Length: 381
Image (cartoon, rainbow, N blue to C red; front, side, top):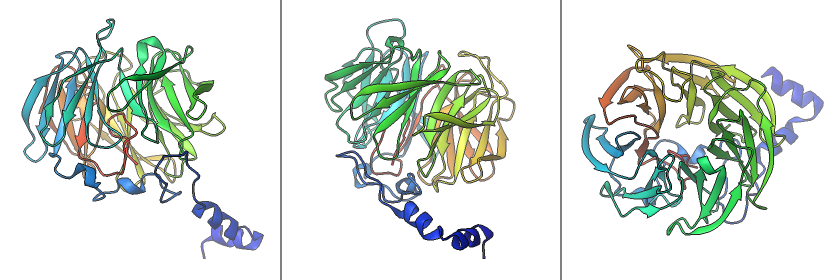
């Protein structure tokens, strides 16, 4: 018998543990249920494609920040099959909550003419852009009623109609300089946003629509992407200056540890079976770094909270943002400072690349498994 099981049986605690693991999660109204409380990623497993993505082209959509365009890659042939102009400074390609639209966030840095460009996944073609102030990134409330436009330069979250992008309300987050990436609690009641330029996190109450507080990170640094653990108890926060991930107790809003990974830790992507976290280390501490840096991908085991593999980019590189293929076999990442996209074999760590536009950023892989999207480059559940 497993010694841990034996201890729980002796103490009479094992039934309580089993009950805690199986107890249904009480979600906010309108949010889809959590089928497996032990694994929030259970519905994003390989093969679990929703009816909403039937007919979607299998493509990689790459926003190029400096060339103001989107390149479209056919993953089967590893070739660019289309490209089109969008707005100024495209940052991310974001799947909508209902999985029917891909939104390009063009934040027009230092200007007031930011836009959101919709892409039809069935055709791979863009539609008419919406004028939206400073859309650096975008998420969706767990109930799907609002798009959350992350207005980074304004230190503000704008809640908008997810179809028309008409403003519903704004929430100022004044102490969160460089408000950037986010992830949501397992029950949908709160979100934690990273503050890239103030070395802290912001916790947002999505029910009362208010800022619950800020958490200054003990190692300082420059927090980037954030992802919840499969059981919902912890959040992992990539830190580009600390070269690793902070482990955060979400409910307590307190640090619970730190795991070193590699230079310029940036993007976080769960494996399709929910057991691993792929961590993109951009290879530089600079916002705009040099090409052929010490870029790599670290593979973290969720169960042990330890790095079990490190995959360097041959010849150097700058792995940044992206996601995992629908079958889980390939991790697609932009090479931010090298003007390429990497296709990384999730079994061997082998790397192939495709040349794209100038400064590729938050690419998305489409379609992806899952019932609904919480935003970013495909935070699906």
